[in-house]
Length: 292
Image (cartoon, rainbow, N blue to C red; front, side, top):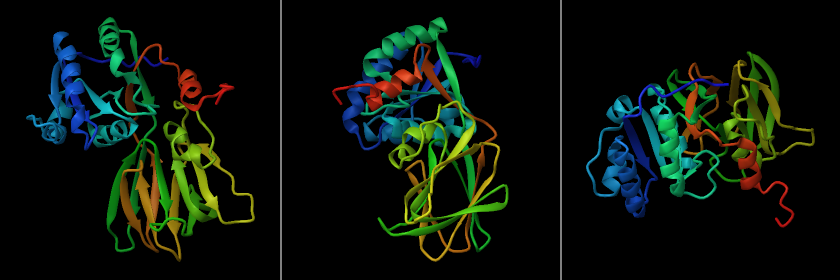
C-alpha cells in the first residue's frame, strides 16, 4: 500500500479549464471553501487572465504550493500533471467536465474531500510517466513527458504511416496503418481503448503498444511490455506527427527517431481514499449495465 502523504496542507495551486470563463463562479465558490479551512489558494496566471483576476506565475505557484488542483476535465488535469512534473507535487482533479476518469472529485464533493484531506483519509497514487525525446536527423533534440500516451500518426486524417518499432535496440515490428499508440496504464482507457487496446490497471508498470487501423493482412495486435524496456520508433516514406497526451504535436520526418522510456519519477495523483478504480470503470464504461 502506498504510504505517500502530504507534508503540509496549507497552500494549493489552481489551474482552470482553458477557454472557459464561465467557470469563474465555480472556482470562486471552491476557493472560498479552501480558504475557510485555512488553505491559501494561488491561481495560475493564464487561468486568472481568463476570468479577469490577478494570478501567480505558473512556476512560482508550483514551487510554493503543497498540492495542485485542476478544475476542469481530464484534459485539464493531464496538462497540469505534465507541466508541473519538474516539481513533483500531488495533483487532484475536480471534475467540471464530462467523463472524468482522472478528475474524479465532483464539485459537490469538494467539502467532503477537504474534510477527508485534513483527517488523513486520502491516498496518493504514483502513476507511471513517459519520458521521451525526439532526435531530429539534423541533430536537434526535443524532450517531452506524457501521462497518457504518445501517438505517432499522419498529419492528414486517414492517410497511412509506416512506423518501425524497436525494443531494447532490437527491431521487432513495422506498423503500417493510421498510427501507433504507446500508452501508459493510466492512458489505457483513453485513445488506446478506442483503438481496441486492453484496459490495464493504472498502477501496473508497463507500456501498451496498440496499432491504429492497421493496413495489413497480418495479425497486428496490441502488445504489453514491461516499463523498464526502452522503445524506439522511426517512420519512413510518409509524413508523421507525434502527439503527446493529445495536446502537444511534433513533426516527425524521415530520419528522425522517437525514444520512449519510463520517467525517473512518477506522477502523483491525489484521490479520496474510497475511490475504487473498478467502480470507475463500471460507471464510466457502463460495464454490466443491461440497459446500455
